[in-house]
Image (cartoon, rainbow, N blue to C red; front, side, top):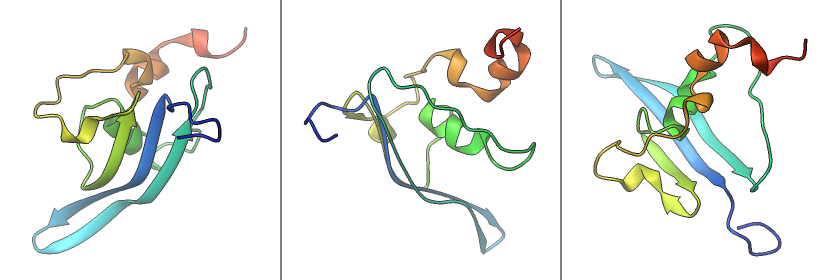
Length: 105
């Protein structure tokens, strides 16, 4: 919740992601927190290969995080039984790279 007790559009709370190579844990997201208010726009800008797709795929319900919560309009999407909730393709990193309309001409 924000300061005015309005629900946030997206709330990322303590999101973590790890993969395993054999028995060795390889963490890729470390306790990510991000509140996004309704009507607010955000951009994740980093060099190629730096891990932008990992959090975006979790927010867009393409993958589930190892830990933490992602709430969209107050609903914890990590607890859904199936990843059937698909947020707009505009949030997917591969769709952004195909469109030149994201930058001013």
